[in-house]
Image (cartoon, rainbow, N blue to C red; front, side, top):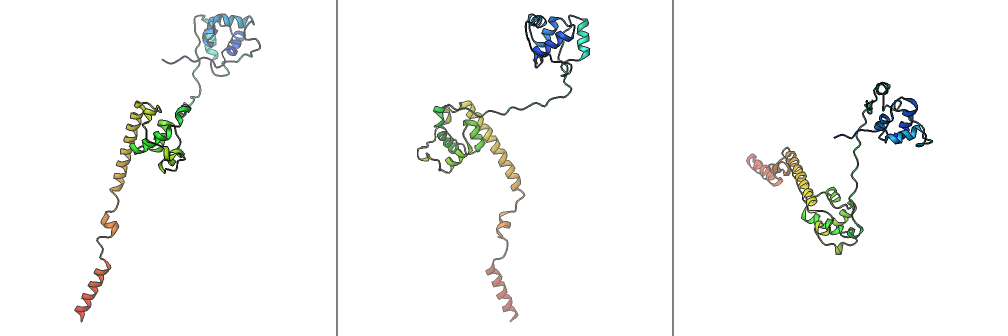
Length: 221
């Protein structure tokens, strides 16, 4: 169920509606998301002192026709006017996984376990699962990590860096991605030259050419 939109500045809007329209306190309160007594306080100047009124018509939140219709019918409830321009939805960026300080020292062990047991995992898959960095993964792969001598392969679930459900889901996604990549590679490989063509197995060797030249000379003599 969609949530009904309210003005961005409810009290400023209520101040303008009280001063410039004949709407009832209940109508203004319903539109602005305020209590009727709060709107009455605005009218009596006990509430929202010093707040400059905001014209909802100028901001496109109401139309003159809506206000006029509601003024003639006290039971009429105002609703936000449809926006003239549709705003694009903003996709929120996923926040990086937070790991408690006490468990951060265990990340290299988990990375090493994933590298050994799930070679289908890309660096981005490991980063999403346990929240490490690409540089750390590269150093562990190359065994150039500053603590490489003490790094042991330990299941990230055991270390508490992720749940078993999260690990299983990541494994299934990585496996599916790996299989798709293999299929694409197989399709591309079908158009490549055969081994015989690339190695030149069908061509005569230099020794065979020499033998043919000797036999031809013998026949001519």
